[in-house]
Length: 71
Image 1: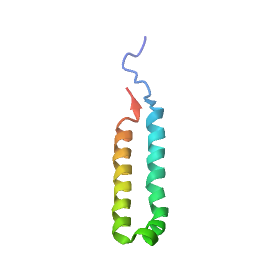
Image 2: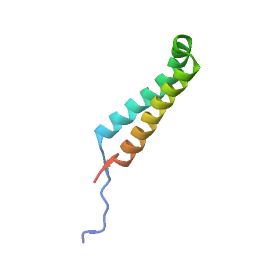
Image 3: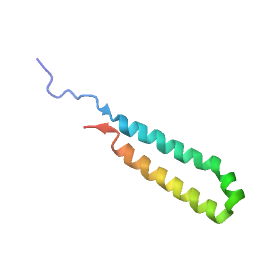
Image 4: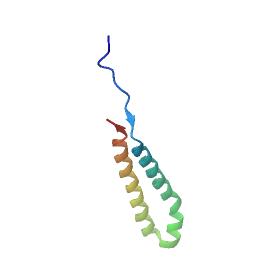
């Protein structure tokens, strides 16, 4: 008797795992780059640069999480 309803474990998409790691590095690097940008460019430029970096990381994380498992 075989079980036809057995579920297979989903396989991780390695490209998505690497993409998540890259997004993590982008998000964390923004924190450490704030003092450098602020001393050279001022608050306004620093704020919008960091906002863009964090938005890019957030969109990347959402994309890679949705594609994490191969079907």
